[in-house]
Image (cartoon, rainbow over all chains, first blue to last red; front, side, top):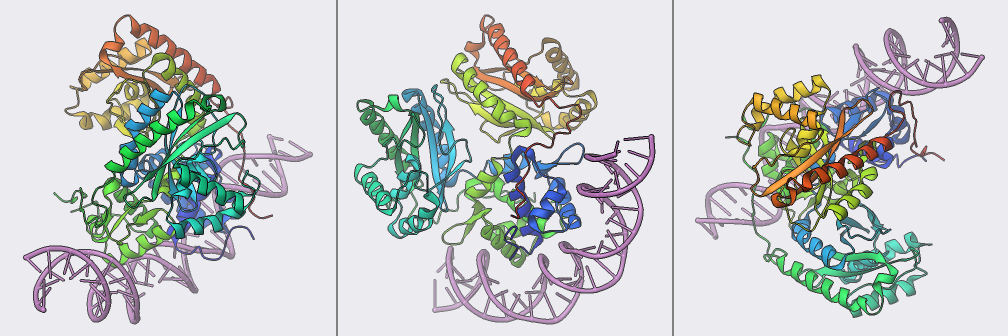
Length: 273
Length: 273
DNA sequence: GCCAAAGCTTCCAACATACGGAATAGATGC
DNA sequence: GCATCTATTCCGTATGTTGGAAGCTTTGGC
């Protein structure tokens, strides 16, 4: 019953499973036997794998050799991952501009499976709470404005798949039922943005627009998170307008070779001289 | 001759090597044969490992199955890594405060081996260039103010080790020779901060203070990056003072159990019911 | 301070897995 | 359309991985 013990075979998979577990453990870290127990592995096996991971710089062992946690090297390596279509690079100046102009916190979200992941955020002066939280944070697709904006503009089959999968996950977080969710999605598609203070986080509001690709499908969302009083009826349309403009700008910068995308682009150094 | 072909054995190591390579490749990604060539592996081996990595969600394969790149899941997982001693959590509000107060960009750097890694940054309104660049960025320890602040306040043996290792790496980036570097380090130790426009990045200046642990050794650095005219003789001491105050605040929030650190802290759920 | 218990590490023989050559299928480009 | 390069499948082999057992270290109780 512990973890899904059907499957994990290769040492690579075990290694990744351990990394996952250590990610869960966050800064608290985990001890060797914790890991062994949680993953149904024997201590020697865990020991060997952890040793490898430490040698490779993916995991750090605490001084007293007691606790293991993810290493900064892993962080630095993976930081280069969150940039699909160069989205993060493209959006960074835009986000800076937005947070400076709007004086609110801006989020960049992309889809990852059935979640939205926060790729970047640019802080405004107003402290806020949000679902996505920090960079790397995840939310169920459909919860929160940015996340909803992406969901609403997914290709139809994908959208249906996500809805089917996510409905059960949304219990008790404000999504009442399928009808409600579908109504919301239709609304967002209609308006072109997601706003509406859901009341899920008291006093917090947000508004998000999708970033679309050439086919009109969402690749990301630009989202503003702020305190409710800053998104009144007067300001909302202004904010939406600005967001839209920027999102359109991003769309134009997305790799223009899309349909065929036979673009070799810069390639690795050969390694050899 | 390509890569260091002495060593790589286990599939875990190969998997990690591939992840590293894909990190290098950035958004461009790499094809199967690219990887095989660069790592001296046979295509079937690479194929198998990549397949596993894709299944595990660490790597994404491009539609046409042509190019592989790091997946967002990896990004999200590793985002939980960059928080040693809860530093990032502790520093986030401080950095927000600093960037709001100073209206400049603030960096949080920590040491990772012989480099400094940017854990977090909080943007100010003035666009800047820096060595560390984005979150996850690395610099050689000793280059740039934040990095230098850390180096200067490392325990002596470690400092010496880093100096020895890094001197060759500093060729042509403004560190003239060992004497110069040591003078700088002494200066920083003496003043308690690193400033001095190195002139390496024209028009850019910065100032950094170390974040010290109980023993007085650097665990991180708080750094301000800005345009040179904003760090004149009048403003510099003000900025330094503010930075110092905040760094001292961080120091007090660092886990107070340090000397013995027998703190179990929150532990993983048992997994089994 | 001692002893018991739990955790960590080393060793090694049995085993399973990952390996890579060869051959096939699929792209790409000339 | 053919030649070349790339991706994928197959399979016998060898290599790396496994986990029991046992030693060693740390932790915790008394």
